[in-house]
Length: 174
View (tube, rainbow, N blue to C red):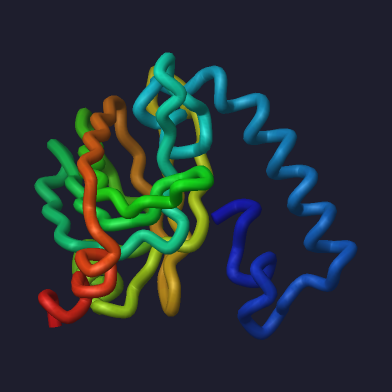
């Protein structure tokens, strides 16, 4: 993570003070505003950019139902998360990264430990536009871990879920 780090959230040994956190937040908001129009629609929808129908998603507090890595072809994440907005209904999100997929940070074994932990939740994510039509999506996890995914294409599918499903994900995976 470049901006929304564990220290920014107030965690870790080197937590930022209020002024430092505000400075990082302002820098990230500026970056976010610059990069959002350059992202393909599925990616932008994960970062708060509504599509033509007003639909968008948030990964904050998402839990991992399953995941499959077939690098460099694809990385698939199936997450159960709370939908954005006032109705705040749970949804299942399937995110498929494809075309030259590369993990940034951990190797597959370390990622498997984090994503296999039933307590893992996604906290924050950041986007980057890279040269040659590639993108990077970085994730900060709780209680441990962070990783990035470099890719050329992304697909996102959403379907309804229930609060019971959200809370039971860890129990079924344990």
